[in-house]
Image (cartoon, rainbow, N blue to C red):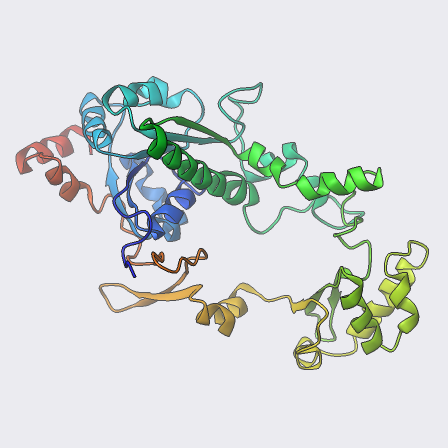
Length: 382
């Protein structure tokens, strides 16, 4: 079994910041790629916000607006496999570090841009954040209570799924294509495109029913008792996902309501059934329901808090929660690697570096002397 990961030997220069790009490069770093995160010194005060996604990476400071900064960048780019950036469209071209510039010195480079609305189209220069991309894509309209305004989800769906994950997939596809052709290529990832792609089942339901899909009022969102959330006696919640009738049947038999088995998706009875199930679940605490329903084959689950989930034995056994110790002996919990490869497993190996921690060592690695590095510092290049 190899211990260095499936992507060992690849080098990635990550010019992106905040969440989408760093999340993408974290996925690749977890599986052995060498990721060098590059940021301008002016962002040093903002570095703490996304530190968990800097694990397994090196971090350097570099002023790409300076001639010397670009010189250093191109020295690194000559030997890199992948470049990732998350600026607004046109920024890398103005800086002189865009794909066309890099491929002149490294024709095999795979260059991935992650942006809110993509490199083309009428919104390409529009500023935005996760909530805006979800709004434009039609996703946010489906989140929240039926008669309330759309709710902003507690996780960044557009950033992580629409942007970071799709970027990782695109990079891996481009790597495979390069293996076949010997050529690199450019990847244009739009977080709004990625968010809209998540509506595939929603669109299928619309095609099937011929009806618009409404917030908290669709086949898989609160319309029926079999796929819903319920409050317990201690004001906690559990979820029921008994979509198939065989699961719904077991729940109905448990509540001694056999007459509801055949009425699972009956629109005339759905509110009556929801009210009945709602009242039943309010009779016991969440802990009591966990005991009562344990082993009952109905597709259910307790609604955990983050802290509770981090302590769940499931995630400990599957190494989705891992402990890392810093130089002072302080242990911090990190999320593990969700992709489980049998022969080349990924791993969480190193803590997130401090801002610019690896600048000097990396400059030495590519041939700069101590005096030259001091000069760079004095000129604000690093």
